[in-house]
Length: 243
Image (cartoon, rainbow, N blue to C red; front, side, top):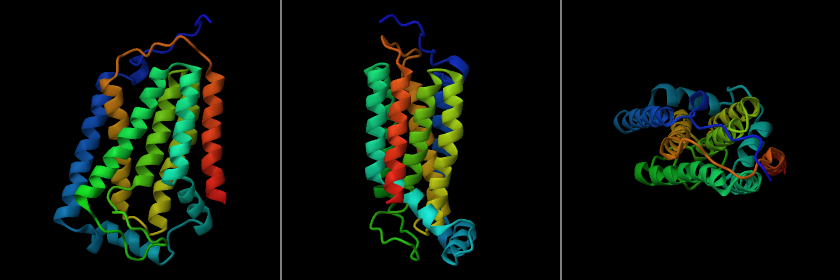
C-alpha cells in the first residue's frame, strides 16, 4: 500500500535530538537535586514532604478516596504493562516495528530506571499509608510509569499529526499527574517521590528522542489501528481501577 501520508520528521516542532538532550539534562539535574535533598536533609522529618504527608494522613487533601484509589489501582504494574504492550502492538501493525520499538524503549527505560534508583536509594515509605507495600519509595513507580506512558503516546500520535498529539497530551498528561497525586493522597509516597517519578519519565522519553534517528520511516500508515490500541489500553486501566 503506498504511503500517501508520510510520517513527520522527528525535528518537526520540537521533537528533535537537541530537544531530547535538553529533557535529559533537565531531568537529571532534577533527580540529582532531589537525591541530595532526601539524603542530606531527610525532608520527611520536616518541611514540604512532612507537611503534605500530614495533610494526607489526616484526610485534609482534596479528593475522594475511592476515586483516587481506583486511579492508583488502574496504573499498577500489571494493567500498565498490558496497556503498554497493547499500544506497542498497535503501533507496530499501524506503522512499523521501529516505531513500536521507540514506544517500548521509552516505557522500558523508565521502568528500568525506577527499579535501579529504588534499589540504590532504598528510601522508606510513609508509615501511615493506605496500603502495605514492601518496595522502596523513591522514585514513585506509578508516577513514572503513568507519565511515561502519557508522553510516549503523545509523541507517537503527534507524529501522525499535531491534532492527534494535542488531544493525547490534553487527555493523558493530566491523568498521569492525577496518578501521582493519588499516591500522595493515599499516603503511600512522599511528595518528592512523585516529583522524582515524573523526572524519571522525562529522562526516559528525552533520552530515546535524543538517540534515535531524525526520521522514523514506515511503509504503512493506518492510524485508526493505533487509535484503537490506545482505546484498548485505556479500557484495561479503567476496568482494573473500577473492579
